[in-house]
Amino acid sequence: MARAVRLRFYGRLREAAGGAERQVALPEHVQTADELVAWIAGGDGALGEALARPSVKVAAGETIIPRDADIRQAAEIAFLPPFSGG
Amino acid sequence: MTTPDILVLGAPFDPEEEARRLRRTGAGAVVTFTGQVRSDGDASLRLVLEHCPGLTEKEISAFAASACERWPLEALVIRHRVGDLFPGEAIVFVGAAAAHRRAAFEAADFVMDYLKSAAPFWKREIDGRGARWIEPRSEDRRDLARWRAHT
Image (cartoon, rainbow over all chains, first blue to last red; front, side, top):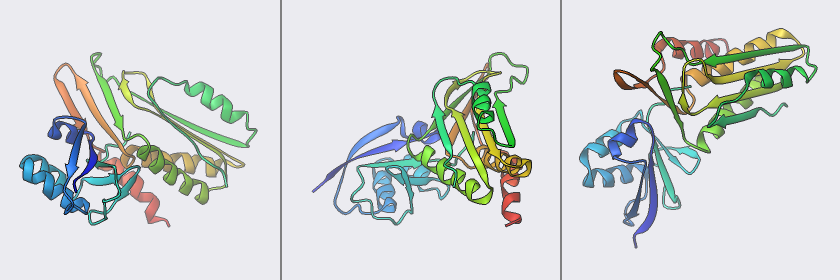
């Protein structure tokens, strides 16, 4: 069964995604951040490519997670481009 | 161990008031730093800072806690603006209070090097010619790396 997840995009990734957030229904086979990026790339190749860059960090809630982490319990996934610092 | 006092703020704050509060701790040494938006001679310039609410505060807290482990601080205060910022406005404040000056100077310097190069903010500069995303300068990254060289 598909599950509802909110995707959030920060900095220049918001421009690449055409908005700060997207509500998506993820199919069951999407279990890791890597698989999520591949799934996004299936619908939007340019955005998928931008999110796949190793410099982009992935966060579940308030925590940065590895790309191979299990995201099945996450209600919100954020994509963070390289930090500018303040 | 001292718990750092950290706020990410969407509206202007008063660095003088923060400094006064730190001095009232009665610590022997209080070092404060205020970073302001430069005008670079262009009155139309502004910065737009973005953060990831929750995550940004958490990452800064973890780093600030490492400063409190490394130096015997009596207080560590961090204020960081987000949103639209104009020349002359305070963008960041770091204040460290300790019994002696070395710890206060070094902790404030250490925290600023982190905030400038590795904290989760995204910064755009907007002027008459358009908008640009700003990345840390290589100098900012080197500044942070020098703390690792001595550990």
